[in-house]
Length: 150
Ligand code: GDP
Ligand code: MG
Image (cartoon, rainbow, N blue to C red; front, side):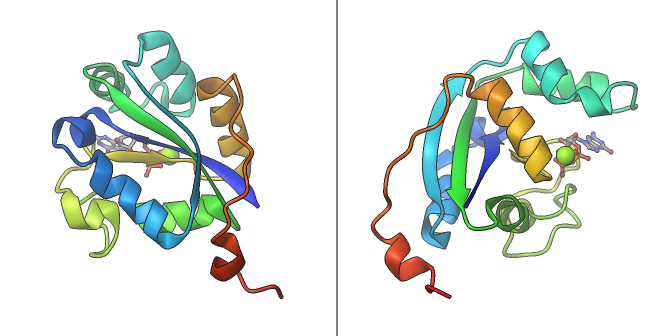
């Protein structure tokens, strides 16, 4: 089992897509082990997107992420990091495959509705940053019928 970090960006919240997006993770069988809505300040945005500092889109990205509330989730499951990135799709909504969140709902490179950790290392760093209080531990009974035992 892995835990990954996702958040619905300001455009997704403003467009009323939080439920639609979360539904994709739930119906896939993934487990929600943390959730919170917040307005991101520049400090948190800068720490989260530190790897992109200096790139041309960075100032706009920080402005965007801090512009309006977001909704963050910790998501757990087998290979949760990779599975979540597959559900999310390519960065640019115009290039993302249909069936993915970005492919189904977006037309933008920057306003792409959702973030998802890109590796286990990123997930661990981002979970520590966004959920310093930790995530929940509880049994999801449907896991018995979601994962085969092998
Ligand atoms: P992700 O892992 O698919 O979210 O993409 P990246 O880690 O490469 O970039 C982080 C975020 O920065 C993206 O989700 C976009 O919101 C934004 N971004 C990345 N590349 C571009 C770009 O070329 N133009 C704009 N406007 N935003 C970008
Ligand atoms: Mg990324």
